[in-house]
Image 1 (cartoon, rainbow, N blue to C red):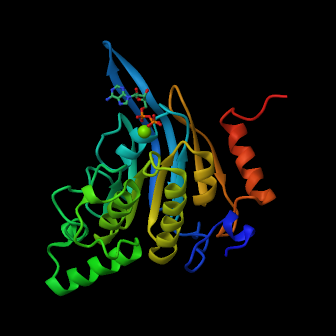
Image 2 (cartoon, rainbow, N blue to C red):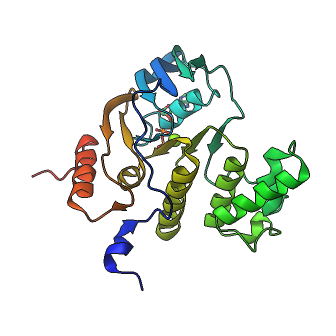
Length: 273
Ligand SMILES: Nc1ncnc2c1ncn2[C@@H]1O[C@H](COP(=O)(O)OP(=O)(O)OP(=O)(O)O)[C@@H](O)[C@H]1O
Ligand SMILES: [Mg+2]
């Protein structure tokens, strides 16, 4: 039986992620980014003067209330939307459109219902020789705990399994960056907890640079090495908080709770005395 303390930790059954080096040039650099949308004959500013950087191997959470522009920001970074002003650089080069090396993971949106688990995971790597492809598919099936379900279709899987399948499919392509937009939001508590643990495991073993959009404070403190706190109307960066906690994170520790309180305060949700 697991001890009570172990149960409170978000275990990472892998090498503990080391803090990314801030000395290297930025992997991602967002500078002076503004997005306006035409609404009722005028322009609505949705994002205003966004500046931040992300280093190789970081797991950064974009945290903020509904409507503050998190998805819009991720869409600009992903090359799906052109900013009105400012620019996004990845590895020093401007982002001009979607790039297959950078993968989006949405909530249950991406798996192909007509393909099996194996078919889905192998979809983006059809250019590889058959044996290499088979090995890579098997590796990711194992990594996300879908062994035994290789021939199953998405309709036969639970919501959490489909989500893991989507993460596996994204990783099989070997992306150098991963963008997750509220990817675990619609799942039940236990599945969410397990997927966070798996994401940290993947992060520790694969060292991808990950941008994770969430409005869940606990999720951000459990996952991120840095939290970019956003505010709404217009969407902007309010503060960037470094989460200086070792992994696995003890969600009952005083330091964890202090970060949680700090973010609650930042979002204006702390208890009023
Ligand atoms: N194409 C569009 N035209 C006009 N307004 C838009 C468009 N897309 C988004 N918006 C507005 O931009 C704001 C930010 O939207 P966005 O989807 O980025 O928020 P979000 O932080 O991801 O919210 P949520 O947490 O609910 O997903 C919202 O007020 C939204 O109504
Ligand atoms: Mg959104």
